[in-house]
Length: 397
Image (cartoon, rainbow, N blue to C red; front, side, top):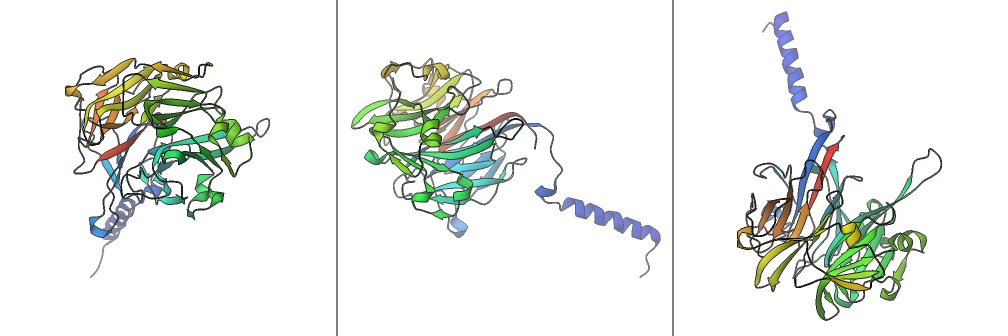
């Protein structure tokens, strides 16, 4: 068969089109600055076996659209739907195991992004240690030290994990976590093991302190020893403990004590917390009843958390919420986790996961009282446990 010159030209252009359509994400041109609103959802259920496997981590991207229907599903090796965080500075997800019932493991999962521009996670890595069970809080701490005039700052990075294991409840600090992936245990994995004494953690976050390096550590709890006393323990001196003192040490509870304890008056069953420094808001979930018979779910909001949690020499005191979202119309029964959109201009919502209704409810950020969510989707038979929102006004990929 003979081909004319025109035929060769046509075939040449068809081949170019075909080549362009098969490009991988890595080959895509850099995207311009864009808004980010990604909601990370850690589900309780786990099954990693073959065809019956459960995609137990989901990313709703974007989360602030009309129906929250654009979802990326991911099979994470984390069992039991523990705390989940994302840090854009290192472009990685961290996920722990909540350890409910039989779903226990002793790994913190680090999942680097294959593409931050498109919100696609890559292969999960494991950081293993025998104490990493019943994780109730994760936080990423970066200590930045100048190397001299005009020099690039040298960073020391830690993943912090708070576990609820009775009298062995512990705050773990693991430096350079990307270098610990693939570890299967041993003392060298952990830089510090800090015993939390009577505190039984339900959540954890870092808030602004005296500087970017000197953060305050806030740990939520429902139990203080055998007493049911829901509240927050505030710790200062984290920088000194992690940076200035020797590593590879076990720290007794009497050496790293709360600078202050705040008790939430008249509330019970505090869940995960959300800190929004730009909005000057702090939120925590709560409900009445018991885990097997929950009722009257709420979200409690506290204004000006940087001042509220600033140690002032008072050992302990009671606090009450400045604003409460709760009541039959909210649909909240057993809320577990809350996430505030902290963007000054674009942030319009907060999100709540509910273990009883299996919904993630989205409310206007200024909602108060007995109000309905603007949307409350379910995700099949999966139970959303911890959630985390990555909301950025602009990001150059």
